[in-house]
Length: 198
Image 1 (cartoon, rainbow, N blue to C red):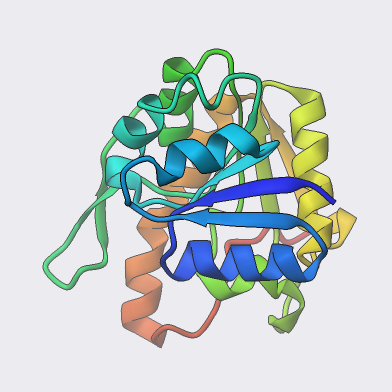
Image 2: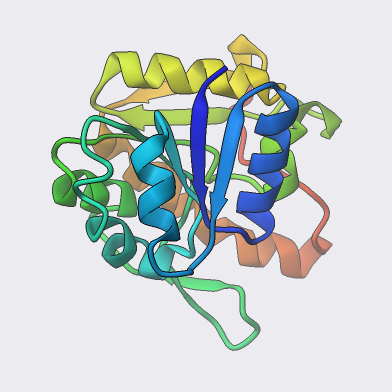
């Protein structure tokens, strides 16, 4: 059992929080109420960033003290929205939200994962008709191993998880969000994930 704070109580955060609680973890969900995120981050071992990516950097940089020596699992994508509300462009081209967070939080171990799929797949990967892939990006091997174990608690098989390397590799997975609006416009909101076929 691990103490986990989920920052963000929308569809992504709520879905992850419920699944991790079912797996036996002690989970706190923090919304935008002033002070709630700080309190939740301070008492957790692992913090999950499920806030809207456009505002994530400012919100989490303000929690630098509370996030010191913690693992920060970043599942967000920082994009501008198109007229239909779907992602349009990357906010950090040539970089990534995960890299920006790691730079702003040098004493926090940032791990990027679960950002290449629609949110229901995060906690129910086996419901897809084909094998999905969950990617890991981060500088700290121990932190990535901890996140790998969390993913298995969410139903991810070990062989479905691919460690891409350092935090710079998050540029690739974050750029995959540019597929999403086109796939949704073509096939609707049917759950899907970006996957590596071998």
